[in-house]
Image (cartoon, rainbow, N blue to C red; front, top):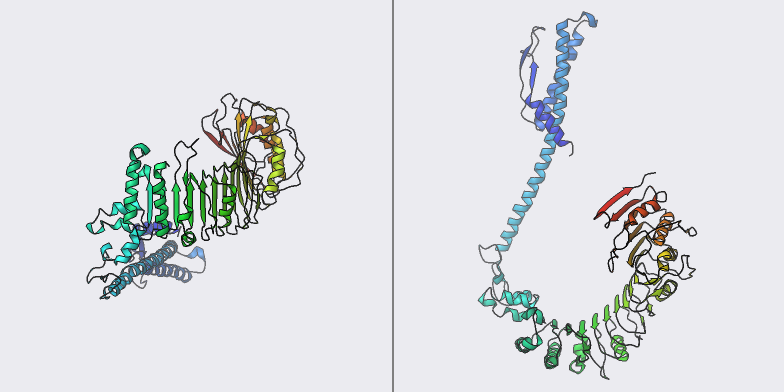
Length: 614
């Protein structure tokens, strides 16, 4: 198909200058008599191509016969016959070539036309057949006894649908969208009442300037009015988002009672005030309003700025799949009992809950896939989740949790307090499952030595490591001991991608002297290295040189002098990172490695890709 335009151009040029020579008579009465006239083919199609092929073969055959009829000696052939033989050969070969082009073009055009005709047949005739079959349906009654298809009317209007289908469509809309739709037709005036999702958001109902002082009573009246109109109907989702105040307690109790009576599956109470620090008064969740049947229906629960105490007869949420707890005021025992009663839990998030105690879940959470613990003062947590795949932790210290999981793949850990690098490297493999493949660690590490740390614990399956490090000028030795981060590579024999993002506070020493070397330790699977915040410190240069020298399969190396995470780099640091990186890699990098250096300080936003050649 790529040669088709060229063949078409050759054919067009040939037909434009097509002047052929033929003899005037069918048989040669006189061998020296030649007549020139124009010869036009039927067109550049299959038939025209075949005719031109035949004509070319005929001319070559006549040239051959003229040559054999002449004298055997080539020198005795008259000069006129030689000219005629040459002309016949040239014209015959030309027609054969052009005829072949015409034949190929015609065949392609015919195939394209056939495909188009088949597509038009399918699009037009088959659809018309379906329309005729549809219009032959005389009556089709469902719940409303209304006819779906009318005689001579091929498009189905929304109002032609059965009432139960219309109700199903309206029930899938959000409350806000259902209310908007109700103004389109007088028949839909009460269609918003069919919606199975109720979401009451104070800021969206009354604007961003929602104030508890001026709008809270109006919010209470409006929500009560809607709940009364929806009484006795099935509501799958009930969400309330408003800043908590004591005046809202009765309304929230009504919402919980309404959820229990409406077979609600998803319940969300987001009551976090803008300024919640120092505010100890929270909504007490009324578990006594939920019977056993209601608890067995709930599948998702979100509680924010809530406190609760479990009743003695609490039986748990057997069908609960998602649980989001934020700013919860509860004892560790009640939380433990609550989680033990959620055997089908798949997603769990606990954030900013000041338990200040251990949390031990005795019941196995065999369906749990996602676990997030953020800014909770838990001293320890133990749980058994065999299928857990994602674990996210944010706290002041490294987690001392024991998570028993055989499928843990993705781990993100963010710590605010400074931690000795040796302690982190020893504790993490023991705390986390050995099958972790993607690890993100954001922590202010203290680097006390530039040597490789001896560590028997390993990340045996780790493939992607992302380190977000904070270096402080109060500890200048950390700048020179960055080389010790190579211990992470040594503890991960299967590592494929390495990301290191440096965030430096203070000037540091953006100069390099003689680079120190570590023992050879090949990282055979390492293919991608990305380093940001590279300012040319001695330790950074040594770590870069060590990683590149020991990565024979390295494919992509990215170096960025700007900081990508955390606070921006101090402006006192000299923009030497790009130059120092080039000097370190001058003879160490493989010719097969693609190098990218982003120097965004000294040259604006300059990006360069260099393919190093041997």
